Length: 373
Image (tube, rainbow, N blue to C red; front, side):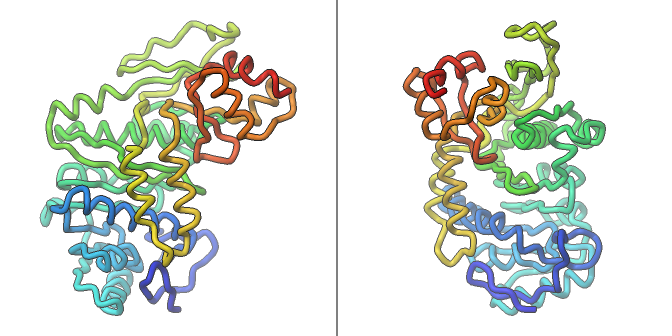
């Protein structure tokens, strides 16, 4: 069937519920990833203005070729890769349908990156973990690596052993599980890039529905890679009172017990503790979302929230806090406003509707918002 998205028209197979592109079970088109793709196009537009030399784009898991088609329409020199011959034929036809002079390769993308790289921008959007592809990407890409991960259970600690194996870190399943997953992913990516004397700096990242997505700008200097590694560290979390602390460094020094209530703590890490986006770049991406995008409203809302998020390694769930305190939850705007009035930096967070970012402790949040209850 023909599908129109972002001003292009592509032929796609009938999608099955829950199917994803490149799932390995036929060639699928996932309509629920339209927001992901709309934001990607806006990133490509903004990044081209940031670095006009970035002109080549590799769609590493082409499937229907939708990402490659949309990048090609934006003026990028596109290469699509897939190991599935049917996907290659479909992607090739969709490039031609939209007048995009791109190339489609029936290749293992790791081999392609090593033999035909470097590319300026590489987009890795697999079914599941991206880790089998990131060594090749960071060792052969010039400017920007875009990564999607859909294996949220290992990332957030729900499938802890799988997270340890795939991401070489210890995730913990907490009420800020979505952010935990993103920071576990970023940690693994930053450490992988550093092995090639490359800093992978997140200029935009988000968690939406059941995937994490990040865009990493590369700096091929060993000193910059060292600086990126210094943004890694650990979070120490108390399940009883929800207090948490963090420390930078690759050696953990967990407290013997929670400094707030004396209970035991759980430690996650090494995870990425730095900013998950560049605020100025995020605002630039927001300005390049256009009305022909099917998810334009959602993309603008997401990017507005991301740009204004307070930089803190974790977020609080306001409803979880209020349940802990045995009080009804007030409106989020009132809650954030009370923190501001008390002198704390605070903002909403994009992870969900009651997600709150602030460097304040649980005790400080309780004191600042006491007048609301």
